[in-house]
Amino acid sequence: MRKTSEIIRERIRSSNSRFHSNDNISDFIEEGELTLLQSEVEERFQDVLDALIIDTENDHNTQETAKRVAKMFINETFGDVMHLCHGLLHFLIWAIRVCIRVVLLVFVVPVHTTSRISWATAG
Image 1: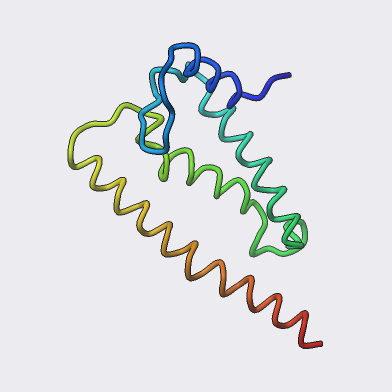
Image 2: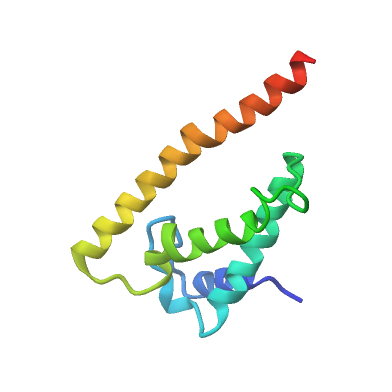
């Protein structure tokens, strides 16, 4: 079965449109596909967590992290490019959300990862 992202990407390419990170692609997403796309992102982010050797099955802090991150990316971080955008206020809310996510990814995730690596190399 083909991935939902591949199907959407093919639609965009066949219309000779671009799909840069800030481009609104809502015209190319059909009903029900956002849910499928969110599931696809969840699967791939679970692979990232597994590669980082994070126990998402037994650690209550990380259970369903992949699901939460996928939901955040589809509905918040990239939500406005996947849904019809409604004016300047909507854009400003989106920009603030992106800034918050960048701060979290730049400062919070590396601290967690560094402490895990430091602990592993110190022993």
